[in-house]
Length: 480
Picture 1 (cartoon, rainbow, N blue to C red):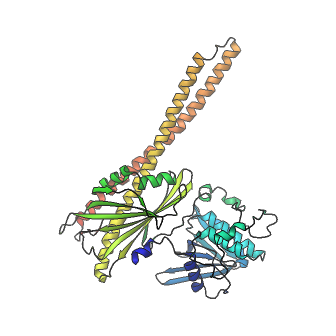
Picture 2: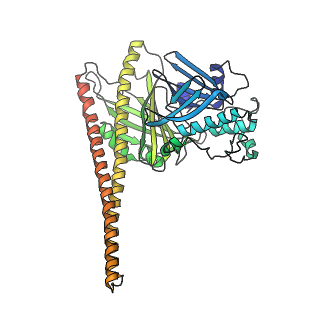
Picture 3: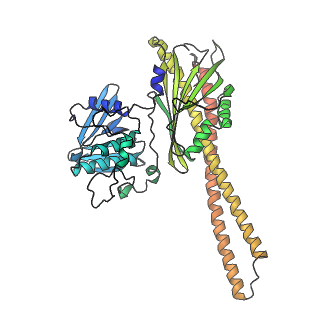
């Protein structure tokens, strides 16, 4: 039952809407959830939670160690909505102001997309425009997909097939007579943030992080398809990673699609090394990876992984689950998010549970630290290869130009023609020199970054062993 629950990428829209109504009971019964986002409210500390939007209300809820924070704002009371930067650097925040308060929300996965939806609903509320059922459900389907967990018997639900006849509203900022929910173009944004081009094109993931811990959240310089192939198709990459971790006996099965669910899965088996002076030195592992059917090439991939380790203390009590979320930032960049959780088949004593979690989290975090470093190193290698290829191409271009000028071109006949040729040659040489300098400079920078990454990777390979040798209590439950 626990496993089935974890395989669900995120709650259905119906469950989200029920949560929305339970959390904000004072709202009118007519208010229906339109969209919700994971974000954090900046106070004395960051309060991680969710932002909920209905047709007339903007709400936020956070529960940190049973410390609940609830905010409800009538959209009509909002006086300004601005895109902001966390610590004046990271473009992932939105400030929502009323006459008496300012609320700074940060850590949006796709800030500009979230901003546009809030902006559209806010403008619609200011103009007292009520969404028709078709318009409302069109937005909901855009945000949550076609599978909402609803039927035609649920209130005024409109299915995706019924929305095909929805007319397209002309897009006009000067005469914004109603909320434009059928046009994918975006309204003008704050010009002070017009430089956030990377964030504007980032694809919003359709999955949520696992509730345990987030290990990796980084943007890498490769397309989302190349990143997916590197992690889940390139056996050389995983072999290199496993050799660094001293994993052996790797066996990787082919991806197989399940006709009933539409998901694809594969099984990996390998042996991990454990530093346990009182027990076995190795342990067999079976890892099942599941690629979700909604993964879209060029946009987003979600892979869930279940790892079962045998031959370790309390192995029958628990196993670990991991989620890889790969999203496109732009054509040449992608975001990698990896989260994990520990699942219990049966509840151990508190002392045993503390021991399990201490050792398991230690192994997981060390594994993903090496994985993240290696991914960055591969990306830098790709960039360096491209720069060196560009340098070689520039040299080839110069050689071709000389060859052409000496063989195919007629010789100048007058002093003026010779002067013109010499001038063109000087311009060409200067342009090539500038290009070479730029390529060499960026190549040197990349080499420095690669050196730092390699040193970091090398320290990561040595430090844990030194630490483990100095520990009196064996850190041996699992390495992933």
